[in-house]
Length: 255
Figure 1: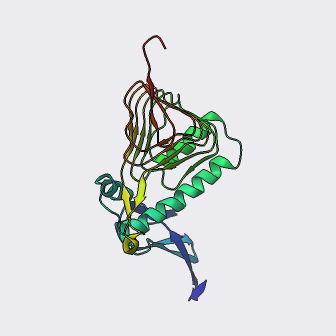
Figure 2: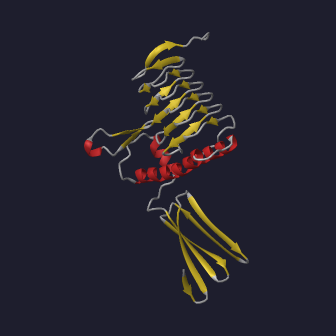
Figure 3: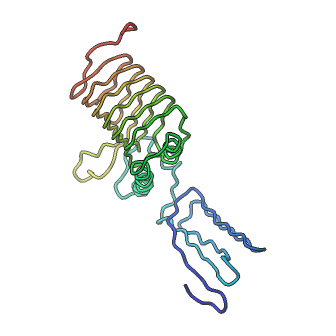
């Protein structure tokens, strides 16, 4: 804190990377508003009291991207170059996801609290029919879409940068992993990432310890046996299992 005459100036640093940032202070007749849209730095000046001036510097780490733009780029499935702006924003989102999942996983929450936390994590409304047994793990969250009457059991991991959609009525067993990123096979480009979405249809049952690889679509009503590694699409109303997962049988209406 520095003195300038009879006014004290306090400088606070904040790590904010929203699409836009607002700082509003209204004390007496003094109101100050600072708005930033896709700016590297924003300085908002607010009078905290008659003799104190607050200068808030909102630092975006040199990045001009926002979450909407990031998701639009990942949805094109184009390669993400290591160290690029997209890659740096990916790391930023991972830190936000870690904060929220730590909050979910490390104390008891009511079902309503869980839904509210999942809304924060995904940036999307979570239906009141959704059920989660923590812990849950993700290094993004913002490209995870969850339908109605979905149940997710404890210990699941969602690497959703490339996009994960879970259809209505689906059941996700213990310790399921869904991974939407591959790395480039070239040694020189090994840090680069290749996103492809995972799509889970309606009323799918995924058993415990299943791994679903990027680019896989699982059809409505399918069943994935425990421990399977799914590398290819699964037809609707089909049971698959094994490593890699292969068809076991077709589910009939009477099953």
